[in-house]
Length: 113
Image (cartoon, rainbow, N blue to C red; front, side):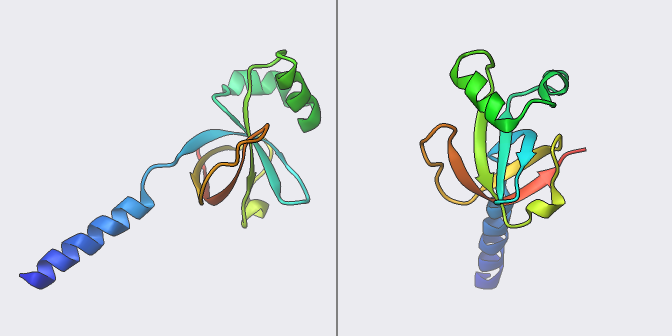
């Protein structure tokens, strides 16, 4: 009986660890320095309208109120698997730093189909 309870507890911990993603968005840029700029709450249609703009321009226009982009800069170990325009689910590793845009480390990112 104790083994069954322990097995159930461990299975529950495993499932909680896999949980649901904290963020979903569209990648606006993956740079050579390991930073990924992600726009949260951006539709595919809206992305098509801004996809040719540089990340710096988008960030500056967001500050100026010209865009209503919810941006976040992420670092991610396996960024070579990702590219601009990918719609991704993101699991964070630790806290989000309060800056503009916010910054965080991703422990897992999965491209959504």
